[in-house]
Each structure stands twice: as structure tokens, then as C-alpha cells.
Length: 90
Image (cartoon, rainbow, N blue to C red; front, side, top):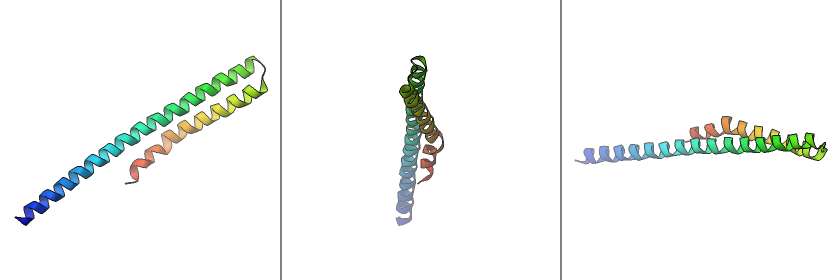
């Protein structure tokens, strides 16, 4: 009788472990999407500032736009390369 209880306990623990891992994997996917969207938004905003700087011949706006554009690209790159590695932590 004890053997059946032990097997049941192990099966329940495995099931809960798989459920937690599925939730964690889903969370990593959502986080990846959010980070990529944030980077893309910042990149677009930087592109607009860059074009505005070129249109008005404003070196300050050009500089800020280029920095935002590059930062947005970097954040999107982090979202595509580093965030998926979080799923391998556990």
C-alpha cells in the first residue's frame, strides 16, 4: 500500500513540476515579446527624431535620434538572443 502512495506522490510532483515549467516557458515567451516590442518602439521613436533632426538641420536632435535608434536595436537584439536563455535556468 505504501508503494502505491509513493508512486502517486511522485506522479503528482512530476505533474506539478511540468505545470510550473510550462508556466515559466510561457512567461519567458511573453517577456521576449515585450522586450522586442519595447526595443522596436524605441527604435522607431529614434528614427523619427533622427529624421526630424535632418529636416530641421538640428544636430542635437540628430544625435538623440541616433542614440535612441541604436538603443532600440540593442534592446530588440537582447530580446531575441538573451531572454530565451532564461528558459534554461531551471
